Length: 74
Image: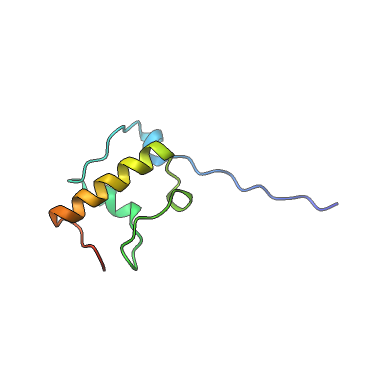
């Protein structure tokens, strides 16, 4: 009988570090959550963030785009 490989679930990077808040001013951290080719916000499955932090990241990415810290499109 074939055994199925179950992929380990990614842990939330922000939960592991103990950070509750990501600022739009911290561009280096925010760039980790944006796709490099098109500049889209990466989904939870790709980044491994939990639902709570994904909402915070999305909000902060939108603020950073509006302030001109990161581009809307690459």
